[in-house]
Image (cartoon, rainbow, N blue to C red; front, side, top):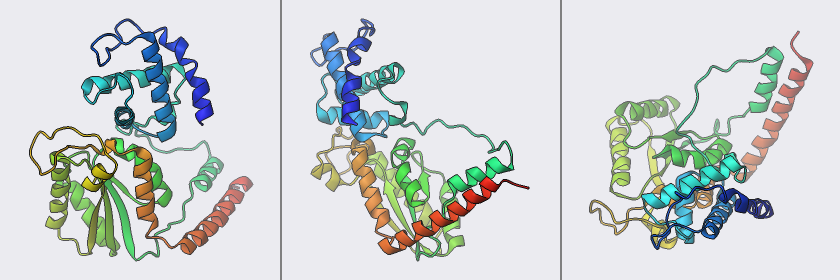
Length: 302
């Protein structure tokens, strides 16, 4: 992967020749030189290659931590990263799939050309329920679509629900979750990912209060997986001075946690609820059943 990025980054020289004279200034307040822009773009390519898939905001925080020239932890620095990533994707240097954006999506009914193509798609998408015999339900809740785009591959692989609150959630949203828990009847484990700042902690507290208001009939274990203050200290995560006093010296967004670290944390947390031998047996049966569906699809529908 790194070899690929190095080769691609050589093309950045030609691409930055087309950047207008309105390009952003550097820390010294002057306009960045062509060489400085090339170095910035190379650095952002390396970061994206190492941490993809990631949101623009994740790349921004990683660039701040890495000390990429001209990228300061403010709105100006974010704009520079955002502009650079647009240029890199449009030029073909940066694969579009490396940058995730779950805030925009399309609704459309699923349809098929014919019954045979439907069977083929069913076989491809078939998932055997890993949790059908489990003693508890495991779910992941997060504060933003940006985070959901980064951890979605983990929740998909483990086949666990991913709830996105989008800031302060509604009472109806919490009620729907509690109703689903009660209908299932098993105890619940919720792993939560959110900002460590006054608003982020308040969002989580309000969400838990809504859940408590509906008095679930099952036991609910709630755990803030990220961001915790220990993670801020241990990983030296970047933050800003909090706008409101809340007992901590920094306000830290969830995107400040490197995407790979966050995915590993979540992977380990969910995996701790599944015995290795159970997972191995589950995957074996799933593969056999998928093969049966594929054979049915190949025969076609009479």
